[in-house]
Structures are given as structure tokens and as C-alpha cells.
Length: 501
Image (cartoon, rainbow, N blue to C red; front, side, top):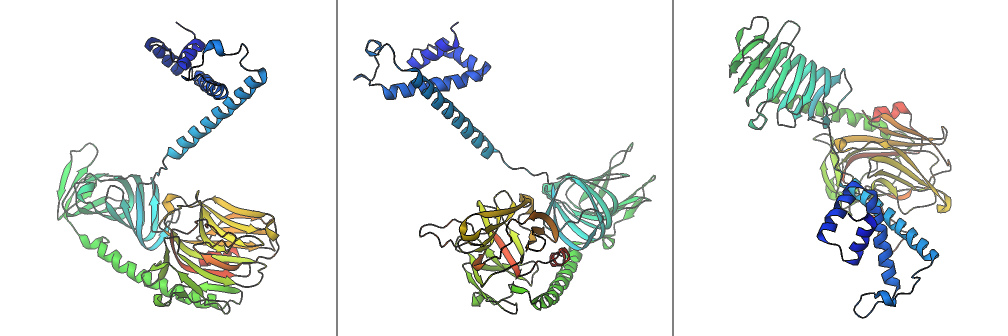
């Protein structure tokens, strides 16, 4: 058996036999460090070939080689280059492996709709993906769609433990389930037993005394400990008690899809009217410099500024779409052309910006919310990074330096496609930057430079860099906005909380 150095030399010379190749292969698997040594030999051999004249037939003849082929300095230089190349190769490999790793989610269902929701557990808004865990609904109706296809309406007060994309446990309250054929086998557990659905519609009422299951369509299986499985068909109901009792199904005592539709319409209308009243109060604030409510005539291609002073916004490219409610309008940003042009003259000593927006994805390194045109001399860039951090970038005077004020990662894939209220405050009195999401404080960061800002010409959802005649960095938003406001003062936590309700 030959030693590794000899095997590597034979490989470089092209004289490696099949048996020796198998031996080298086994050594490389058993000794990973031998691979680095092999790379170094490759590099040194390649550099020596490049720096020495070859014969006409491209074969170096030993007789023609000088006795001393290179000096010690040459050896160390080549070794250093080999090490650099090896490190670079390792970095490339690690980068490739990292980029090849797919993102994952633990969610098993999604809250698709809700009416008058009041939670005992952490508050959840429609559009939120749901991971396994306990949901405690104090009042209201919540519609949950499981990833296997089952749709469940729960009525507060209720407790539902999500287990998987095809299973949950109800320990309290009422629910109704619609289970299509693709979700056959969907399972709901109760303290008294389990229900396995065979592709149907059923209702479940769980209370301290007993549990009742009502089958409206199709068939379910009832499983109780120490008892044989019972089949329950359309029109039948049964109690889960010490002694089961067969009843007639009563659909009227459970929330239905028609009921949630009607109640959702009433709730949306109520929220829209409340927003209209709040907007009127907002517009009376003398510190308000910009307020776009996006309720404009789409044929005008402009956004009216409802603040007492300031310019209207000009729509470029962006198209109209639905906002937070059926009667609410929004602008969709999809292409490199899409933006709203606006202007804020003069200096701003303090600043608050708030926006209702829906992020569809973070497709670029930086994704625009509000960005001053060009960069430098106290201009402001409010953006979302590809990693999901919300960033307020503030340029230094005369473009000497700038500071980025970043939140922790907020926008994960689970938050894409949902309406969110974001706000940022440039507070020169408290000497801090504050970021908010849905009225809650995300980050409080020390202000590095409290000198006035110069917003100037700016854009919503995009950026125009006037510094270069060539291409402009692509930073347009993939998403929508349906309200934007800007004040020349620092709003309080309470004021921003009210905006984010």
C-alpha cells in the first residue's frame, strides 16, 4: 500500500492505476484533511506549470528542469496562495450550502376570518398562520383553515389546541367543521372522546357536563376509551357522556358560514366608519404634513393630501386594489416603475411616519416604504431589508456618514400578505429612534445625530437616485399601501397605539 503523498503525486502525473485510485478514494473519505492537502498540490502544480516553459508537446521533460526549480520564497508564496484559494473555496462552499437551505414553517393552519374577536390568549388577527398551540377565544367567531383542507368555525368562549394540520383538541366551547374529501380523516379530540370525520359537516359543543356532536352532512366516527367505535350519519347527534344518547342534529345552534359572512360585512362596515371618523380628527392636527387616505378617484392618478398644508402625491405606474375593508382603496406596487411621488419642503426637526401596508414578499436586498430622492445631507430612507428588518436610514451632513436604525427581524414569511401598521419616530427630545408594528413598540434605539432632517422630494414604495446617470438600484415594494401619514413631531406611544388598532 502506497503512502498518500505518493498516491497524490501519481495522480498529478497521470500515472495513477485503478487500484491506486480506489485506495486514494478511501483515504480521502477517512481523512478529510487529506482533501485540503490535495487542493494545495493542485494549486502548486498549476502555478509551476504556468511559470515554466513547456516543451512543444506540452510535457515537461525532467532532463530540462533545473536542479533547483524554485526558491524558498517561491514555495512560501505558492503555499500562501494555495491557502487563500482553499479558504476561498471553503467560503464558496459554505455560501452555497447556506443559500441551498430552504426556509421552514411550523404552522399547521391559518386564521382566515374573524368577527368581534376578543382573545384570552395572545391576540391574533385574520391572515395569521397558526402553529401548534392553545387558542383561547373569549368572544367572537374565528374561522380557521387547516392545511389539510378542513375549515373550522369556533365561537367564543372556546379553547382549541392545534396539534397538526389534520388534528385539534377542543376542551371548551362550540365549533362547526366543514371537511372536504381531501381532508378526510380530520380529527377533533374532546375530554370525553374523539371524532374522526369522513368528509362531512358537523358541529361540536363541549361543556363541563358533556359533549355533543351533530352531523349535518356525511358521516363521522365516534371513538371513546374502552368502547367500540360508533358511526354517526347525517341528521344524527349524540352526547359524549357516561351513557351516550342519540339525538337529532340541530344546525341552528352552531355558527354557519352564512352567519360569519353577514357578521363580517357588518363588522367591516363598522370599522370603516370608525376609521373615517378618526381620519377627520387626524386631519385637524397642525403638525400633520402629509395624509394620504387612498380614497381618491383612480382616474385622477394622484393622491390628495388631507393635511392642512402640503402637496398632493403623484401616482406613477401603481394600480388600484382593495384595502383593509371592501370599501377601502389601496395602491398595489409590483413593478420597478410603481411609486408615489411627493415632496416635503424645508427642514424637519422631529419626525413620525405611519403606514398601513401589506407586504407580499421581500424580493430585493432593500424594499422601499418611504425614501427621499437620492441620498446624503440628512435625507431619510425607510425600508425593509431582505432579512425582514425594518430600517430607518439617516444620511449625515454632506454625505460624510450615515446611520441605519434597524429593528430585529419582523417580517417573516408568516407575516406576508397581511395588513400591518408600521410607524417610526425620530425623537430629538428623547434622543431616540422608535419603531412600531401594529401599535406595539418593536425597537428603541439611541439617536446618533439629532440635527434636522431634509426630506425633500421622496417616494412611497420606490426610490429615485439622482446621483448617477446610469442604472438605479431596484428597491420597489412588493405589496400594497392604503394609508400614509407624516408629522413633524414625535408621536407618543399611546398615539401610535391608537393608529395601529
